[in-house]
Length: 387
Image (tube, rainbow, N blue to C red; front, top):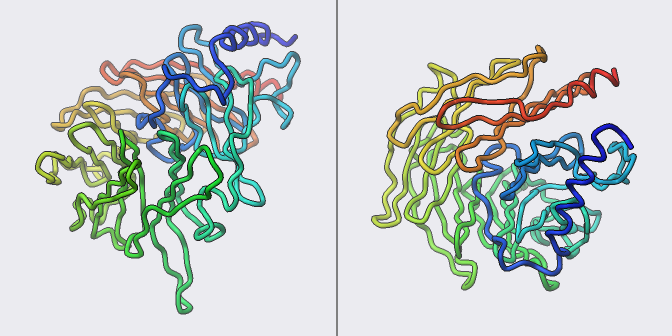
């Protein structure tokens, strides 16, 4: 057995005893979408109380918080983890922790499969196959852009910007579909706005919240869809405060408010008075810090410096909480940094290279309050040995 494989296998076997098959369910596990992960670009991460899951080079990776072990999610003896026969092989989208299991969408020629497996990497099954995929018959094959996927309370919600040709001209519109995890019904369109060109979704409680930006970024619509009744309502429709600086737009829904952030600034929508207010502006042109996440009480901003990455956390009043720069001490090449999620006050960041010549991958954690960070794992030794 390869070095390190025995310890990893033992850890995964211990985890196997704690979980049942995907079809059984577990009332003690949440069926709510975790808004603290997949907030920016990297729609391939999720977390349980015990582990962080992310994707690297078509492999499902896990970081066990208690032991500090990071490895492919596979306990096969002598597995090289570099073929599709590996239990950790992954070629899907929308990776989520749902009902105590890992879920994702796997594209097929006819549509998609909704796939589930236990957090120890065992018991992978197809929950259901969906003809025309989670885009649905109306939108399947329409050339969707910037898709987002969210598993929440028995459904898969899918948002995308759709490219269309109308009277010989290229047009775009924003849409959201809903696909049930059980039954045989296909995906249903629950939101479509032909005047919008960007769309983001955030399930919270009994609702799914949608944030659509107009084609010139001058308008914003916040829409709430009730999952049980199927009814919807527009919470806000009007001038977009982020206007010409819509880059890195994100939103997180809390019980009493919605926090929105973009390159322009940080905004708050209050349910009590249905108002959208600016909390403070971000001067991204001056210091090149761009928003990459929202936590409970602060915004996370980042700045790429090539081989290093600066992380700044700012409270909702505009005060800087922490400011730090992270890097791998033995990697000088330029890396692309992806903040993948927040667990408590710990920010998890994956860094990788565009080039496959030296495909380094590094996992960091950063304390949002103190700014202290550590390198949790890197494949540098393996890559250097292979080269």
